[in-house]
Image 1: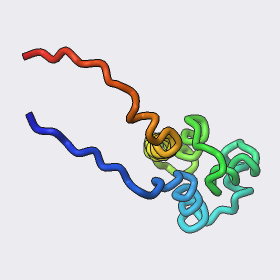
Image 2: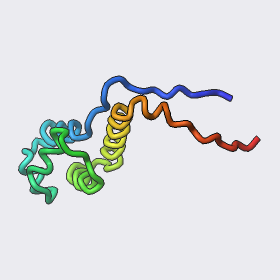
Image 3: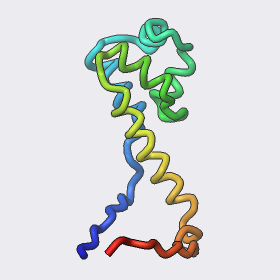
Image 4: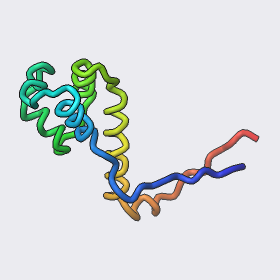
Amino acid sequence: MTEFAVRRPTRAPTHPGELMREIIEEHAHLSVTDAARRMGVSRQALHAVLRGRSAVTADMALRFAQLTGGRPELFLRMQENLDLWTARQRLGVRLAKIEPVPSKRAA
């Protein structure tokens, strides 16, 4: 049986808000205020996501995808990767102390 190595990056994955900010500013040429108005969210809520201070929710991902013609799954996957990386860093050695339950594999 072949074991696959799990790659654990040493730096945090990119917050999806960084990509969203680039798309809004450099590709769509919209201000945060205009993008927020079009998306039906507050400027403060969008700004917090774009600056990486708030997580991208399913709601925000859907609104942003509608605005830009993108796919909401991309932003949710990016957020999930960041959340998992952050949790691994926070839990640290505590995870290694958890003894896995043996699995029953079919022969």
